[in-house]
Image (cartoon, rainbow, N blue to C red; front, side, top):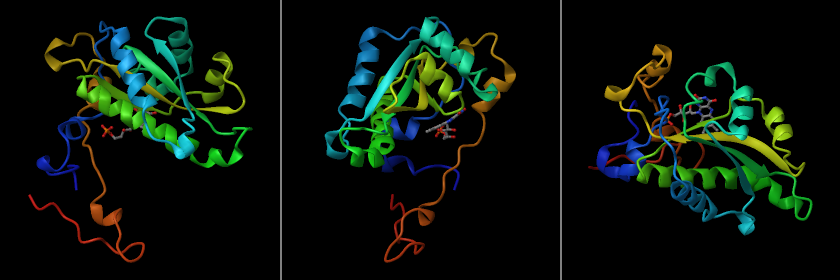
Length: 204
Ligand SMILES: Cc1cc2nc3c(=O)[nH]c(=O)nc-3n(C[C@H](O)[C@H](O)[C@H](O)COP(=O)(O)O)c2cc1C
């Protein structure tokens, strides 16, 4: 299965969302836009309403961004720097006040980021998450407390339309042409017992 869904089955913002690799290097995210993204994350549900998420916000060109760019893996160092803003995500994975909450911290953070992604898509913004960077280096540089773990990065910006692009590295542009694949529902939705496909299929 190469296409996630039949068009009518899910919301437009979900169907059209993808992880862009070519961001408009002149685009600036406004404070209001950034506030909307963070607000979407803030209102995500979480186990015990613990809200075990936090974000270090790095704007292209500022000091936090400089630190981030220096910590990127080689695979991410080409496409990522032009994005307008990067949020480095943190999960409270060893909460001393309530250790039981630790099990769900990353789950809850992921859900908050999913909310942010949907909000961004509804605003015409592109989001590309990434894990390829030196987590320890950022934890040290951002002075992240021991209770918290650096988990991922979330690059946000304006997807750069093909007809406006100049000076984009061909290998970066090529990334967006790669086929997007998903497992079929039969491999992830089960009935009666694990592995038994649920008889669910698109009907329209
Ligand atoms: C936690 C996480 C880590 C990721 N790490 C990287 C990464 O380091 N580099 C990268 O280019 N993409 C990364 N991605 C993006 C995925 O490769 C991408 O979401 C996936 O291929 C599906 O493509 P789509 O988002 O366009 O549907 C990451 C995504 C997530 C959620």
